[in-house]
Amino acid sequence: MRRVVLNDRDTRPLGAEEQEDVEQEVKRQCSFRSRSIPDRKLFDVELSGLAEKIKDIKLENQQYELVTKIQTVLDLFDPESNKYNENILLFAMQSVENYITKSKSGKRKLAVVTEAVKKYFNDDIELIVKMVDILLPKIKKMNFVRRHWKRVVAFFCDQQ
Image 1 (cartoon, rainbow, N blue to C red):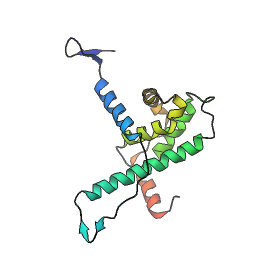
Image 2 (cartoon, rainbow, N blue to C red; image 1 turned 135 degrees about the vertical axis):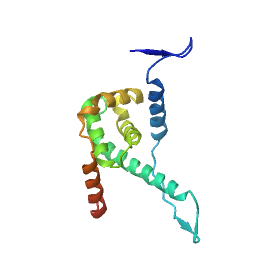
Image 3 (spheres, helix red, strand yellow; image 1 turned 90 degrees about the vertical axis):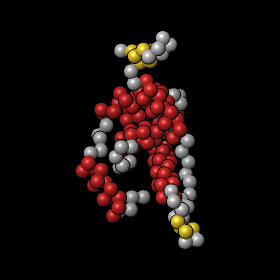
Image 4 (cartoon, rainbow, N blue to C red; image 1 turned 180 degrees about the horizontal axis):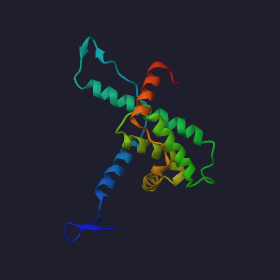
């Protein structure tokens, strides 16, 4: 592995900054919770910036719902006997890939996967991130047609 030396003390591998950014984002998003969505108009007055906040709350609620669904299924398996099981990680990765249909949401997907399977990997987020990088070619990716088809089906059909 090549190393970049910026000064005498800094000998980080290439891509270390990006890896730290991803790990910080995962740690920040791993505190999922369900929040209520406020009204857009209160007393017939609009508040600027509220639409973006409501969008963020909806995305957090979607992540929380997905994590609880995956954990409900994974609770059927014993964490001690299935420790470091790649099939559990593959299941979580494919479920997240099928559920989150928004493009360019890799950090959100990674945060959901790490939160859902961390008890099977001794709460080691770095190990889960590395395993996800290794197992990523094994999952069926969401392409343009499939993503838009899922959105149309979700719009016209109630998927509860």
